[in-house]
Image (cartoon, rainbow, N blue to C red; front, top):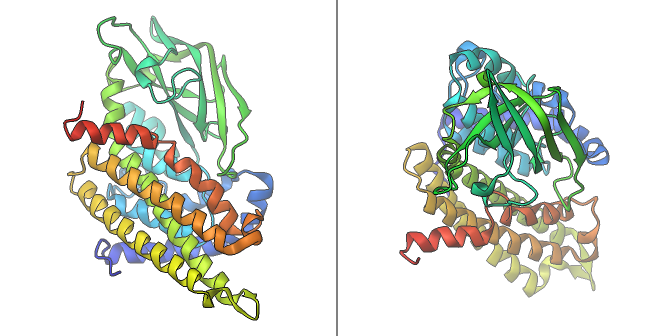
Length: 383
């Protein structure tokens, strides 16, 4: 279906990203998969075409553009090329807004140039072994000691934590028995700080080129100057970017579902069984027709939500609706596509198998489908 979301500048940016991925990523991607890692050099290279620095002020080497549609282009082009880009989406869509929104002038001078150039990689550490989606239950403590915080605790499922130079840590700086959400703060911990340990790399079902690690903090002394925003206000800060974070997951899910359908159409048109192509069977045609309709419906929903986000009108419940609908659609579509590949769909060297494995986490991270349903139900007045 015709899309009206993008303008000429986005189309020009898309051409640049598509060319970059074709030259720099696609030829190297088999090696990334074999090593289950993205080389650090990639982030500097993609930063050179402006991707890392999009939201940052030109004074720090950025473009000063907060238009999420550019981020969307990167995700769509990566899916089109049948690659994933490690922790890039997390850094640009999830973490960059925290730095841009809450850094003071001194912190901007310290960090923004390195982030925009791809020399400083970032991560955000919220989830803990015992908390999951219950961020109000965070147990990691940061105790004030003069002009430092002393941090103790542990984090898990930290995307990009292995490569990160700067980690935004959600920690409890005070305890309020009447409000579990109060007393949480965001503190930037720099790699190499004494007592800060990057633990084992977690082996995942999918997203194999994206490092996910455990982190531990043992009497880690961090300057108070590394506090993002105001002390004790982190829970509100986390909600500020949740809409974009959840929408970004949906954007990636939809791009990958579309890629799966396109791969499957190509496959069934060339695969012969019983003297004819798989595409000639009515079931194949009906399945792909239904999936195409699902994809277009979900795409229309996403495009409307992105337009609302750009206009500052996207609500939390609407972001939850989009994430729920699109990620559930992705799961169904990719599963049905793999079925049409038959036994070849189960072979991991084929992109469809990777798409299948990668899709499963979309309904988990950024808030599970069950959490999304709870948010939507509350918006309906069901409490």
